Amino acid sequence: MASGNTFFDDLRSKPEVIIDPPENEDILDGELVNDPTQLATKPNLVVSSSVRQLLECPVCLNAIYPPIHQCSNGHTLCSGCKPRVHNRCPTCRHELGNIRCLALEKVAASLELPCKYQSYGCVGIYPYYSKLKHELHCLYRPYSCPYAGSECTVVGDIPFLVAHLKDDHKVDMHSDSTFNHRYVKSNPHEVENATWMLTVFSCYGQYFCLHFEAFQLGMAPVYIAFLRFMGDDNKAKNYSYSLEVGGNGRKLIWQGVPRSIRDGHRKVRDSFDGLIIQRNMALFFSGGDSKELKLRVTGRIWKER
Ligand SMILES: [Zn+2]
Ligand SMILES: [Zn+2]
Ligand SMILES: [Zn+2]
Ligand SMILES: [Zn+2]
Image 1: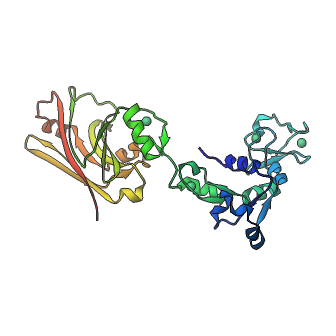
Image 2: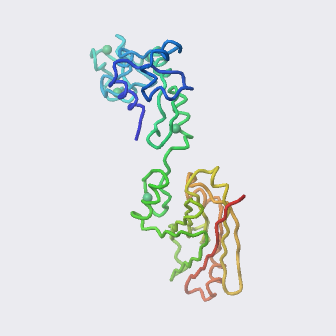
Image 3: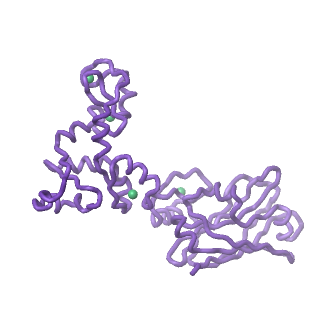
């Protein structure tokens, strides 16, 4: 994964690099850097190798970002290393104290750096603080694994997560926009706070996760089924879905909008944004003998105009 440090690694390989104003993103690709006419016509900030050295932490050798600390002799240190040097300047061994180097912080903050999700496809280049803000909302930031049954910490883009769900979680994959699923449980009086099932549907060139799970709502066990969209919220809104559950002459229908997997499954579940089935009702649908839970959930996904 790309990080701010990669930028400085790039700088190290060249004797001198010109950084352009943000509207020209091509500058880092190389050609313009060596074009003397470009250099003459633009008010460029020349980042010399000595500035690069100033912004290198003497302990971890990474690029330093604000807050930047210094000793009373002016030696600088990154904020990550400061707690690790036991209040001694690593350069001159003097007491470190709590002095910030505001001038260098300003220099560091004015440098333009690529978004840390560059390796995921983002081409954004920003001054330090704008970069931090951008990265919180960057459209290329990786998604967390949508599998809810375990504490999975895998992140990645959608194709990567689809492969991960299939290979590592053995999730059922369907190339279809309709569902017809049966959820059967032999002892419906036991409700664990756990995901029962995740199924992935691919249709309209997108991927959707159908969650079905049981949870305890106060004293009452409840079942919920809902759909999540593997992508961002603005695209999720282009789709709708319906779910239907019934049996024994009774029927419940839910129509909804899939939620982005940026919203955690628990958040979706706790907001009740799905088909909710009270246990008593679920037992009616199952045949009413209270022995076994047998729910048949059907539904479909469609694209809004
Ligand atoms: Zn450091
Ligand atoms: Zn010092
Ligand atoms: Zn970005
Ligand atoms: Zn996972």
